[in-house]
Length: 357
Length: 275
Image (tube, rainbow over all chains, first blue to last red; front, top):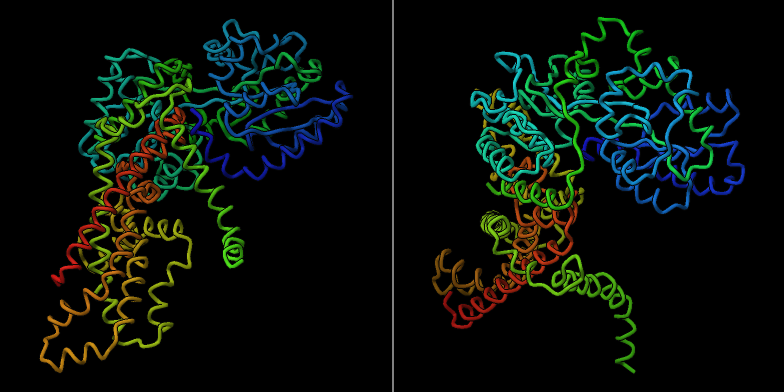
């Protein structure tokens, strides 16, 4: 789960250091808690100009901090030195925080623009926030196959195409355990969150069988290698796929018909935040059509904001199916949940068995 | 007084060694023999016999043997030639062979990636010459090639240094007494350069045993060495420093044993003047 962010994070590690410096400055001004909000987000995951715009419009100062991984965020949040008013994080971490009652209910009624978030996305967020009380969806994406139209005979529609011996040495898989188990588990009709050893062993056998066809198991390099036409097909995150097809127009993205993984990053208001009103105001501001559009253009991941989606012309949508998938794509996708230490150890063991096979 | 003086001179390094060698070693030892609850256990040591760890270990062992042999076969003849033609130790020719070491080794490995890729420089060149492409990228061969390339200077330099030190009069005397070139090589050059060969072999074999970055970059994560297993144990989402320490310890012991065997073997052979 963490790995999809690594690329972005490497690029902004410097910014993070700057943000940490900012944090120490932030402490000094904490006294006027109502004039400011402290926001904690992934690195390079917002158009920073909208922060200034928010300050200008509302007079509330935004202290903005960035983190690298959900785990790092959680450690720092728990540490409690800085009281955050808003945190944006991934599905499973939000799940954890909701279960631990670390977050406040969000007063959706006081938000003018909350209606911009489409029902589909509220439904998706149910898997980590039942009855949606605590989160506001920010961006989301899927896992699928990126393929080069000049290198495949027919458009891949099924995960089975990754087992087609015709593409020997022409397939790139994700070098992370949960992601690489998606195709065999989905093909077998299992949940991608299964902890049943028999199903997982069966999936492992399929992956072992596939290993002789796989060119490489990569993370950050998947996009580059596909742009450079090293392989015909690769398992990839939708955001990366969209960026890749910007560099090479022969690349297309598909979410296989059997289903896949969907992820979502959402905003939550931590229980010990000091400026609840300000935080809700900021969330409302983020949902406002013009702001959401500006932010979407910068981040360019799938947005749950329908006001933004309505404004994008059909041509652009058709061109980039990675960012604008069909409505039914979400129905066949499942979110990852946290499996607990025992199941993670099992996954880790199976992963090693695949690696030494 | 003299003793105190030399103690003072060694002081900075002793501090360095305690901080960056002794203390980390103690930490590894402690972690290797404990589990996450802090209780004593031998599980992390015996883990090396588990096939998911043993298989990468043997792969590392066989691959570093191939790398060491390749480096030796490449550098010994070259060192012979270089020592013959360059009387001056700082000659430009020798520098040319060491020049790549001035560049960061990650960059050099990345360059190999660009060369070996399916449509990289190698295959473009072969295509121009009318040959079929070769798919070396993401294979064991690519990892061996990259490792041998990176460690080649570490084999060349000590052998070269040992060879230039051989007194030319010794060789001339042998020639006068009617020795053929082969006999000179076998009875004079090889035994006299043995210390250089041994340090060359040590400097190539030991680091390539624990190599993992080259396997990552050129092996497409399909070549899984013991170094990768240990790195994953420390770095992956399910990090287990105890297992990683146990495996590191096993690897260290294995390398020490192989060096001891090697030294014994070398003494026996050299001492009896078999060359």
